Image 1 (tube, helix red, strand yellow):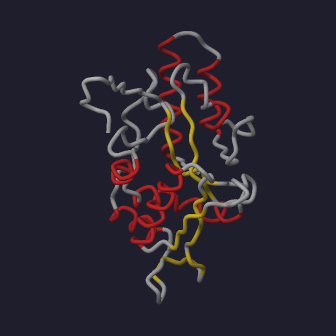
Image 2 (tube, helix red, strand yellow):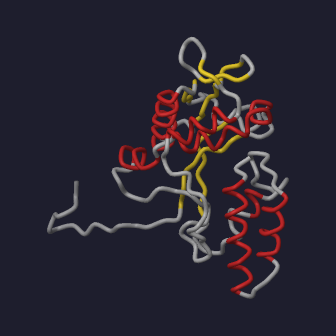
Length: 223
């Protein structure tokens, strides 16, 4: 609206915030179906969400330290690829039911993505992601719980984090087993090892290697 007006200066404020789906691994649903998360990743067109919700401002997210100096660009990014999503589902023993939805063992693959009340960006992201997943045959719904996010009871939600300065911030406490901001119950021995090693050295090359291995481990084992 204001860009191009002579009497105003428009500043493009860059941040390291990211948004993504946070799965609740304390929930029995993901304890049984965590192997399907790569299919969900491949089935979501993040560029389309970025264009629709943020009007193209930003970039597609693939790592929690993507804008940090220790980012490693060579990790699996789960680029939008519906064919790969279908391959993951079929390899996991999923079949289409009579209504065209994927199911396994007679149970439909169905879950709800929650979004924080009052945060329109997250609400829109949840709604579009759910629509995209419906298109591939996953029975996914978006929900805005009136009482706010139920961290322990939900299946998943749209989360927001960011680690612009020291890469230890919003990684060790978010992805480390049983750490203070690990709201998802995520636990990965390799992730724990590399995040711990990275915070215990001030040698730049050693930190870079540990954060590289952390990102590889996280991408290779999203659950």
